[in-house]
Length: 373
Image (tube, rainbow, N blue to C red; front, side, top):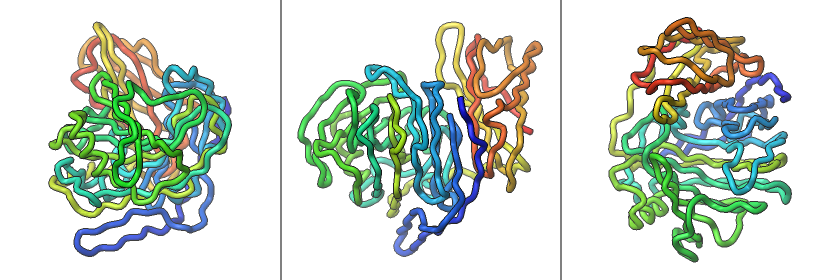
C-alpha cells in the first residue's frame, strides 16, 4: 500500500449568522495547503465546523482522499475492488455532527435535535459533487439517529441514506418497499433493511442528481417515522455526505457541502471533554459473539502541533487475549496491553484521528481505561 504523510493546514472562513436561533455552518473559499487522508484518517476543516473522513472500513486496498481545508474533498486514488453484491470497501465523506464519538464543532455536535422537533426547515443541507462514469459506487448521504443524544460507538437508532446517484451494479441495502414517493420536492424509491442493532432506510432519487439544494432532513425523518422505521424520541446526531466505493472511485469529489441548523433543539449539550496535552483515546465495542468480540480505539491529536507517533496502554479487566489487531502493533503481557502506531498512521495533524481495531476473546465489557501518549 502507498501512504502519504498528511500535511495539515486549515485556512477557511466560517459563515455564522445569529438571529432568532439561526446558525449556518458552511465552508469558506480560502486557499489552503492540501491534506492527504488514507485508510481511516480524518481531518477537521472549515475551522472545525466539518470533518472529512476517509473511512476505509472493509478493504485493505490503497485508497486516499485529499482536502484543501475547506468543506470539500476529492478521491485522489482508489484500488478498492469489492464484489458489488457485498459491502462497499470505504465511505470517504464529510460530516457535521458526531461520528462514533469524533465530533465536529457546533451545530448537531453540541446540540443534537430530537426527531419530534425536526419540523420543516429545522435542518437543511446543500451538497455539490463531481461524479465519474467508471467504477462501482453510490453518491449518498448517511444520516444517523441515536436513541440518546450522544454515543461513542455505533448509533442504535435509524440510518437514513439518501442516494443521489450510483454507478455500476449496486443497489441500496434491504428490500424496496415503496416507489415514486414525493417528499420535499424530490421523488424517491424507498428501501428498508434491519441491521444488527439499527435499521437502514434508503431514499433513492428516481432522477439522478449531481447536487442538491435545501434538502430538508426533517421531512425525510418524519416520513421514516410514519413508516415505523424511526422513533420520534430519538435524536439526529450526524449528517454525512460521500461516496460508498465498491470498485475504483478516483475522481469523485465533493465540491461544497453545508448543513444549516435553524433551532429545534430540546436537549442540553453534553459536557465538553477534559483538556488534553497531546492525544486522547476513546474505546468502543463494535460487535460481539459467543466467546469473543470486536472493539476499536479512536486516537485523536488534541494538541496544537503535529503528533509524530503515539502509544496506547491499558489493562483488561478480565482475562481477555487479543487475537488480531490492525492499524497498529501491539504487545500483551497478561492483562497489560501496549499498542504503538503503524508506519502510516503515526503522524496526526491537530484534530486528526487514527482508529485501531482489534478482536479478542471475552465480552469486551466493562471498557478498559486507556492512556494515550
